[in-house]
Image (cartoon, rainbow, N blue to C red):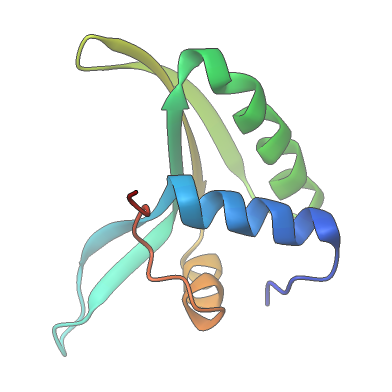
Length: 102
C-alpha cells in the first residue's frame, strides 16, 4: 500500500493531484469507474519533472514509462504508471483522480 512517509512523497502526491489524473479503463459491474493507473502529461519543456517523478516511482517499486508525444499542436511528455492498486491507494488518500483546474 502506498503511503506518504517523506516530504518527497508528499511533494509528488501533491504534484500529481494538481497536474495528473487517474487513467480510467472502464466501469465495474456496479457502475463505478475502473482506474488502471496514474497519468501525468506536461509540456515537453517540463519533461525533467516527469523524469524526476519517474525515478521516485521506480524507487517505490512501480513500473513507469515516460513518452514523448504531440498534444494537438504542442509537444508534450507523458508519464504513465500502470497500477490498479496505486490508483486505489491514491483515491483512499483523498484524490478524486482528476486534474485540478484554476
